[in-house]
Image (cartoon, rainbow, N blue to C red; front, side, top):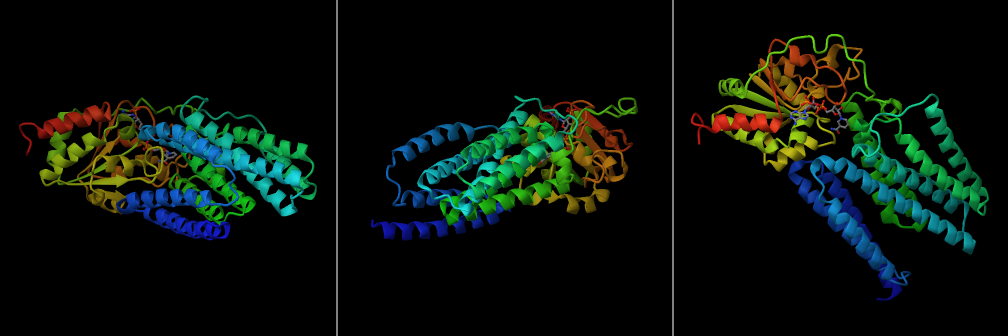
Length: 466
Ligand code: NAP
């Protein structure tokens, strides 16, 4: 193929890939079309790679083949991690993306420095790419380490920390500005790289492990922005488009997560949320009413409407299949069973939707928080499965609570509430839950999978309908 034709064909492929990326994001918005969205993303990315391979300036395909083999060797095992480890796997993907952008920036800087081609625009864009790329690299590695508990998960704070961090970033940006006017000062460029790498680590230190999913989506938007800068450096419009989609979707997702937790961006980034809090005097002293699986079966069988509220504990226990069995048994008896989905239940966006879909629970049975809250006062039984913060009524009235203002699923307003969890230990926010002490709440203590297994077994036993 002639170089001119190859260029035209690759541009056409890029246009197709950009369209597929946009449709992919659109389809990923709904469970019914999500699989199509994933497929469109995969086809778009494969097309983009093929289009790039047509570029006439590629002199040797050997290194590309080596890189692809290495990427595949690392990517296949990474794709097989359990669902609960997806946040750290995503953080690693962002780390690789950030590293790639940073390295392309370094390569282009040294190449163009030697050839005398560093214009102020190019140097400025390379500066942005390198800062965002390398801070995303180390920041995402730290985030993955905290989630995997290789790095201490508690927030590590010291006086003046935010000033030190901002000063570091400020010096890196200043070096970048000086370079725009005099690109030949390569020691300054090396300093930008080093400071960005250090900044990524320091930025994550004060953030608690449990806040990492939100931080990961913020890092996602940084990785996207560095890809935009890389697109300008390489004069590749598809990279600019894909980076902008990545950057803006990561930003929107972090906003949605912050809103669902009633937290601000600054509170997530600088709030040191998740530090051990002094236990409240009342905790552990009030009485709770506990029940057996048989008691719960009797209650469920006599209900006409049941709402199941899944939470992080369901994910830890991998109880979704037992939830499905309970759902099947109850619906066969004519009980109306629905699922209340809180946007930040679990530890990553869509966590509950994915687990329930894995157990083939029909999408129509899943109801969003605002809609289900309207029905809860008329609901006979709410069955809370390993959810805690997302059903804590303190969020409505206790101004001193760290979760004050967070929208919750109002399980306490139902006629009766049954909560399955192992102990009286708090959830992610580290606060006691007054729902458990309410007159209309029964506790079923135990592992969610074991308890629901018991419930489903009794329901399916001799009294069951087959
Ligand atoms: P949660 O408040 O963290 O509570 C989970 C509960 O599950 C715990 O109280 C725990 O109690 C119980 N549990 C753990 N293992 C269990 C098992 N094997 N069987 C039964 N129960 C088990 O969870 P949540 O109500 O889903 O709330 C999510 C929290 O994460 C919110 O505070 C949210 O802001 C935060 N968050 C979410 C995201 C997101 O994207 N989804 C991101 C960042 C932060 P026991 O130990 O007593 O069993």
